[in-house]
Every structure is written in C-alpha cells, then in structure tokens.
Length: 286
Ligand code: A3P
Image (cartoon, rainbow, N blue to C red):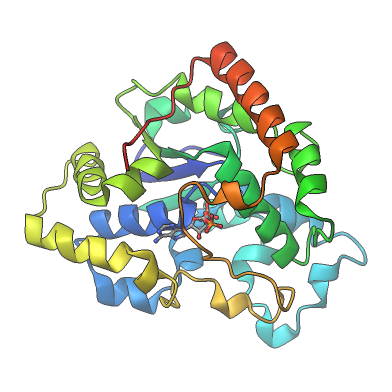
C-alpha cells in the first residue's frame, strides 16, 4: 500500500483492545466534535480497515461463505467484501485508517509519515473478549470452550496472534512524536485525561465542558446503543445467541473465566513476556 504524506491517521491495535472506542474518540476530536455527522456515518465507513483486505481477498475465493451476500447487501458490506488496499487507493484525504496488523506488516515509512494511535489491553481481558468475538463471527465461528481457546491463544494458534509481538513492535516506538501509545485500562480509569492527551497529540483544544460531553458520548452505556459504532447492522451475519460486539467493557472480567491452572500458566507467560519485551502495563488503585 502507498502511504500518503498527508492526513493519514491510524488506529492500530491487537483485536479487542478498545479499537472501536478509540476510533470514535479520535474521529470526533479530529472532526470538531461533529456528533451529527458521526451519527449519520457508520464507523466502518469513516475508517478504512486495512487488515480486512485479508477477508476481502478471501471472500473472492471460490465458494467463500461471504460471497453469499445478496446483491442489495453489497453496498452495506462494502467495507468487508472489498480489499482494504483497494479502498485505500480510491479514498480521498483525509483518510482515517484502522488496522489490526502489527507494525511489521505495515509500510516501514509509516511512523515517519503518519500519526498512529496504538491501544494495548491486558491480554487476559483480550483473550476473553476475542473468544466471544470469534464465537460471534461467522468466520472463524469458534465453537469450543474458553479453556480450549486460551490454550490455543497462549500457543499463538489463534488468528491474529502472537499477542506480545504485536504490542512490542508498537511499544518500541512509544516515544516517537508520531506515536500515541494508550492502554485500554487508562481509558477506563480516566477517560477525560486520556481524551485531553489524545487531543494534544493532534494539536486540538477543547473546553472541559466539551470533553465532559465527549466522555458521556463514549461511555459504554451510551456506546452500546449507538448504531453508528455497534456493528448492529451486521446482525444478520452474526451467530445468533452470542454476546454482542460491544460487550461488557470491563477491566478484570477475565477472573470469571480463568481457573487456577490457567491463572498460573498465564502469570508465568506474562512474566516471561513482559521481561523479554520490557512492556509495563499501568497499575491503577481502583
Ligand atoms: P469486552 O469484550 O471485554 O467487553 P475492539 O473495538 O478492539 O474490538 O474492542 C472491543 C472491546 O472493547 C470489547 O471488550 C468491548 O466491549 C469494549 N468496548 C467497546 N466500547 C467500549 C466503551 N465505550 N467503553 C469501554 N469498553 C468498550
């Protein structure tokens, strides 16, 4: 893909780390808090999803499930069935781009050219969230239990893993002036200050009152009912009965899923990887 010298804004994450939440925050900060426009344009149409080109290209394979979309739905699912590289080439500036691809799979000149917002999240909450997401999606439509999923995740056998390598590549660039490195837990702990940091990164200024309105807009209780971000329009392709795309939005929800054996294995895995990579997750008292 070609990186343009101007107006490229990337939100990069390992899936289920708070991408959607951050995308909406960034888009609004860069669009003068135009809530009416945000409501009228689905987030999937406001950002080009680079990684989805994998799905888009796969959808062209003979017999691919995704090709079963009806003709009248092709517009609705344009972002999913069209490879991201084609959408990118056709897009006019400013381009808002989202990706789950790790830095090593993005163009090498990206960090010198574009602003990147990276969001990391505790892998234990990520794996629970990803488990539910992969049950919800027709591809890969995971049907096993959580422990099976965890065993696959920690051995890098789940699509999008390895988890720590993804974060490490962005972590190493965290002090670059074009990189804003955020943690999901930071957004949860103090959304208002995280918004202020993000606004500053983009040289934007808003009043405390405007930020307070944005906090309210981004609050999960409002967010889950916001049709322009919730992916509700995909309801007919999601697997019925599974938990929704905007799910619990909690820190530490993993405790309800991990048994003692998984907890110990995860502690050892995290200790080893954090030591190897130097990544430090923020610790909050509440
Ligand atoms: P859970 O499944 O733990 O609830 P992504 O957008 O990267 O796919 O991340 C999805 C995760 O972010 C889900 O986590 C989802 O519920 C959570 N999330 C989405 N919007 C949120 C919000 N406004 N506040 C807090 N968490 C949110």
